[in-house]
Image (cartoon, one colour):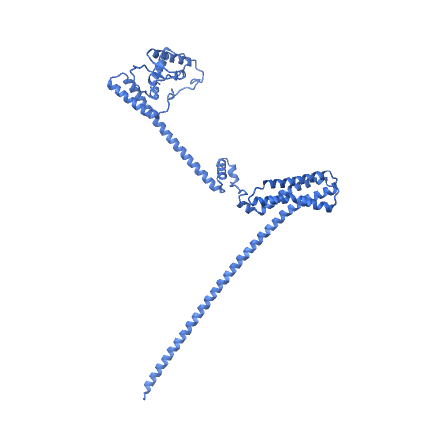
Amino acid sequence: MWRTRAERQADAARARAVAERASIEAQRARDQREMEHLEAEREMLKVRAELDAERGRLADQESDKRKAKSRLLRSRISLAVVLATANVGVNATAVLGQVLALVYGQHWSWWAAAPVAIVVESVAVNVGYFAHDKLIKGYNAFWLRLMSYGIGAGVGLFNYTHNKGLTETGEFAGVFGVASLLSPVLWQIYSQWRRWEDMRAQGLLEERTLHFPLLRWVIPSLRAETWEAFKYGVAEGIRSPEAALAEVRARNATGNARDLIRETQQALIDTQQDALRLALTHLAWVYDDLDGADPVGRAARERVEQITKRFQPFIPPFVPGSLVADPTPAGGNETGTDPEPKKPSEQDNSDARDRVRDVIRNRRVVPTKTAIAGEFGFSESWGYDRVKDVKDELSAKGWTFLKDGSAVPPPRSRRGSGTVPANGADLRAN
């Protein structure tokens, strides 16, 4: 079938367009694969870099560990060599002393004296080592350690006594003796040093106590607080000075607050007691005014007695004259010279008898001669006479006086069976 030229050109153009699109798609696919390949290589390089960094870090850590172990090993070896050198030197000196004592003092051959001296000197060291090993394992090693020190002391005594009298070694006798004595002690210390951590874990070594700066012990204002914190830290096992000081300050603050509260409560109680005492004083006056009154007065008097009985347990015992201040010091007057002895007048005698009479009637007790004499300022013999006068007077009216100082009114007394508190009666009498 024949096609025109235009149609053939159009078909060729379409074919070229399809080929170009296919080429573009192929190029795009190649670019995409290239980008994926580059991204994969980039990720691979990143992972390799991270792996190399991790290997380097681990290698550095391992190197640091090896260096730390090497430094620790060198320090321990050097310290062990130093300590062992000192111990070996002490043992060599002790062995030399024994050899010289046996050779010059006992005329032994050196080839026989040397092994014997080494064996004898090593006995105390071996016993001490076994004692320390037994102690580490949790057993009692007191007797083994005591035996080790005893053997060392015995060998030291042998070295000293057998070398002291020799001309060749007499000047070194003390050195040989002390070397033998120190040998088991030094080896004990060396053995403990090898096992410090094990001994501390088992509680065989004491940890250091809390440490305060020297100035806290020197400054006077801080010394008491420091000592208290130190004692508290030792008692409670506290190792931090700051924690011990904080606890002591908190306890002191609590104690001060408790004391302040107690003082405030006591002041409030004293104020309330003073108020009750004054109220009871007024009730005592009412009681005396109602004595012998009509039935209404007697009912009021009974009411006063009930009130006083209710409040009596809250009032402390009254001391005669405690509420009266003495304007002059005892034993002198305002000018500071000794006063002349005061002679009682008839009015003083009458007032004293009234005072004794009021106490007996209101309190049902007999006041002592000392109380009356102290209240009026006269001698005890004068107070005894006034008390005796009133007792004789009331005995004639039917009162009975017991041995314990109590006073029993007559059976038909007009006074009620209630008692007025001592505080009110004493206040009114004063």
